[in-house]
Each structure stands twice: as structure tokens, then as C-alpha cells.
Length: 74
Image (cartoon, rainbow, N blue to C red; front, side):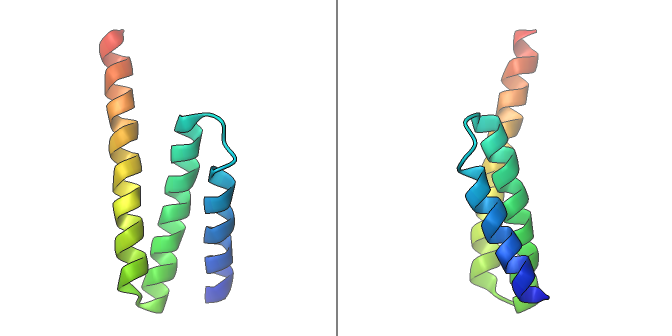
């Protein structure tokens, strides 16, 4: 079961790099990060958790910034 979560995270992360739109890439990759975080938690693997929390944070901040700029222009 745990291994299946790892494969799902791998698939989602890989799929994200096939996206042409940067916003879609960030959203799909952020989903992959959340799955990686769950996988890391199940394995008690701090490196997996820390790396993906960091990447998720980058995606989240960039998406928020993009929304803020778009909202500000209106």
C-alpha cells in the first residue's frame, strides 16, 4: 500500500512536467508534493518530507503572487 502511494506521487510529479501552462504545472506538481509528503510521513522519512514541503511552499507562494498580481490589475 505504501509503495503504491510512492508510485502515485512519482506519476503525478512526472505528469506535471508535461504541462505547457506554468500555472497548471505548479498546481499538478503541488499535488504531487502533497502525496510525497504523505508518503514520507508513512515512511518516517524526513528528507522526503522536508524537500517536498519546500517545493510545495515555492509553488504555493508563486501561485499566490500570480493571483495577487492578476487581482491587482483588475
